[in-house]
Length: 42
Image 1 (cartoon, helix red, strand yellow):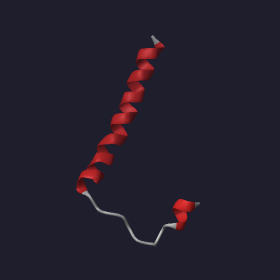
Image 2 (cartoon, rainbow, N blue to C red):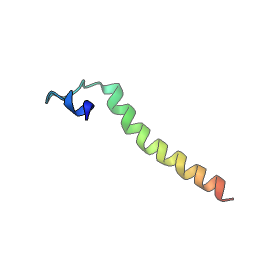
Image 3 (cartoon, helix red, strand yellow):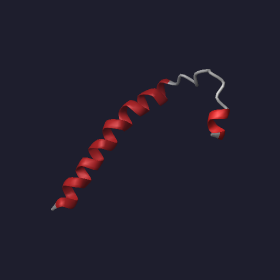
């Protein structure tokens, strides 16, 4: 709750690097988990 108390109703910074970083990170981490699953099932 302390984090919620700091919310002022404004959006955060709009960084293109951060935005595209999240767009790339999400499918990449799913692919990594899929690969690890395949490797450990052998």
